[in-house]
Image (cartoon, rainbow, N blue to C red; front, top):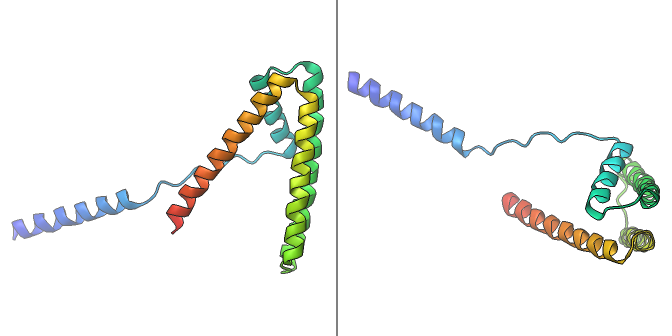
Length: 146
């Protein structure tokens, strides 16, 4: 009887331990920053990476603020359509895609005007690294969810 009881307790203990190991660790919730705080954080990072002077910092700060405001407008417009259960048509999606690409190209041109040659090269390489990291994260995400 004792052996049976010990075996049952051992089995329950092992089974519960195995279940804990199977569960994925939960991610900590990310800190929610206001657009101004996000822009300041980005500006500090860009300043340290590219060694910006005070004039360049002011110009980049303005560029980040403009970009943030435009992104917020797009987000609000999309949310309004989503709230009304209106799905965008293929033409609207294509127009939005084109608008986003145009904005990106305009921002790149503005950054090129603000930064000197070496800074711009470094900035573009950093952007490319970020794109590659995003692609890798997306691949991992897709693997986990398939």
